[in-house]
Image 1 (cartoon, rainbow, N blue to C red):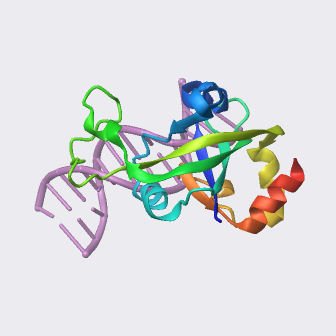
Image 2 (image 1 turned 90 degrees about the vertical axis):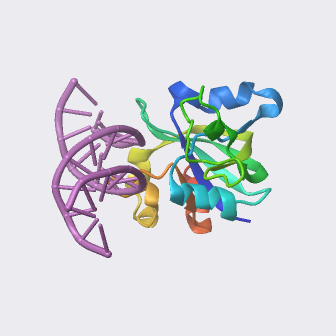
Length: 152
DNA sequence: GCCAACGTTGGC
DNA sequence: GCCAACGTTGGC
């Protein structure tokens, strides 16, 4: 089992939106970064767990846990000119972008803020706390996963 | 709203 | 293949 982290903007699609979806499940579309794409297409397995992180908001931080319930498949929003994720270079016969389905597992008892995560030398290796990090999907080392849950 | 950091694009 | 220009992300 592997651990991951998904960023989302709570104003666009946050944990409150996910909780209200049918089966509390939604496809994680719109990722348009090759590193992130590779992780969703090749790395994530059914049953893997991931932190849900809220970015671009008053209190950026980890707010909950989701589970991967469907492994990588083509991101169909790339084929639809009516969506803002449309990418004419993604061919349905050779899709450029992939997504997974995630299911709400639980909220954390409190938001573990980015500021707090940065205070712990144990987490220095995390891409999330590195300056200028812009990856919207990233792996979480098991020891970091456990450590963060211990902060809850 | 500012701006640093980053990924992508495209000219050469 | 290099690299400057550009657009975007995201913390503050």
